[in-house]
Length: 343
Ligand code: CP
Ligand code: NVA
Image (cartoon, rainbow, N blue to C red; front, side, top):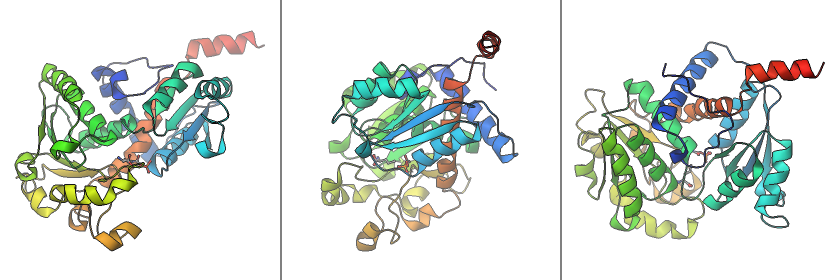
């Protein structure tokens, strides 16, 4: 277990809000919480804690992970669909934040603009966690790193190749997470979907200080050579639905199929895994893929033994629980004082 870290009261708006030491510590805490839960042990570290889940966009994993994480530790969540509250319509985000902060102990936000989650944190007076915005998905990156660490027993020195829409929320948060962990990260994407030069330079600088590298590539077969992790995400993110047809044409060469996994050269030695944040368009399983066939990943890869996508989905629970617990766990000493002063 890494050295103890105190993250009480802390928000997570992007992964840059954490140091690499804090990320390592939080991943170890998540691994411990997973082991405990599988052993039938849960605690009361969130007893009396109320967490607001403010969601502008749809979600299965993030919403359920938050609800179960809080309940496992004696806390509770309230799901607030943005369409059913006044957020940003009859009431400014700042005013809603001040109201929620008077009633809740923390706020998990999922939505469009990064500015909204920043305003919630600025005015809420309680920890705020980013459960996905257009540009960032930090809680997903934590679960991704946990899944990689669980399989390989380490992070530094491993090579992660992301193939697909290289400037989306998942790709850029993963890039940052890998850089902070001293990994080699390849963002394999068409020129038009590359992250900004500024973001690449920032991640590359961070990786270099930790013995890792970050680069952008455009040829998938070349990019995945030596990869330990091949990662993809949907080709059109929530809010970009009007670009669907153009993206399918643009990203077809970046589909993760068995030929691409073989090109890692690491499958036989079981030193390559496949990850996807989900939901995934693989073969004819959804309304969309019935018409188009597999998009970003084929069934053959998705269902293969080296595909750890459901471990990864489960790890959303343990990492979000680690975040809630580390931000909201009470100071034992002041608890004792408040019990005494209430008598
Ligand atoms: N990966 C992820 O964030 O899934 P949901 O959209 O279901 O929350
Ligand atoms: N990039 C995807 C991630 C979904 C979890 C989206 O934003 O829709």
